[in-house]
Length: 112
Length: 140
Image 1 (cartoon, rainbow over the protein chains, first blue to last red):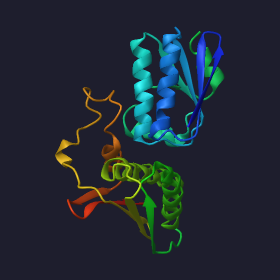
Image 2: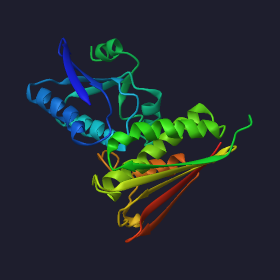
Image 3: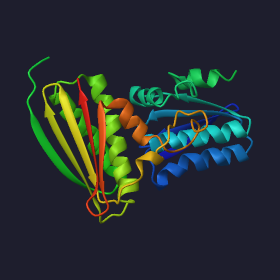
């Protein structure tokens, strides 16, 4: 799994590609967000365009990121969430936890 | 429902999460062969991925030398998926409800819940010496 961040103003857009399914690579996302929090970033968009599905371990990684951002008094949005991932959110009753948007543009603008 | 064949396929996989792509594709394929619609097939794939994730990470503790066996059995309107690992099993009563408000923000513990939510039945057989087998069934 790969992560790459680009800043859109004061919003960090973290592009995730590959499989979010556990294993050592799943730490990449948490580490990236942790570094951004330490740099003072408060607004995050996780772009899941490159992630066709996740398992519950990957969902756990998203939860951990969400919690870290909340604790730093920041805000997190997701975009390009596939139907399969939306289904997983629905099954696990987490649909209302995550702020999701169909596009990166809408996700970034939601912070304005 | 269109005519759907019956069949069985078994695969033996290493204890590596990289196999999950294979599980996803296979589950979708055999679900469709059973005449199950695409939306439901996607949900079944979610459950199968969870079962194999558990087998790899917990049952076999991601030990490369241990195997995961996955069997697909399908007939018109029904699919049965059996996942076997070489682990010693676990206490099912220790599996807590992840939607409980005290646990809903946890970063783990949702796998079995997901399987039970998606599938019509989920049954575990555990043996300290023969491993753990989970059998999941879903009808169209």
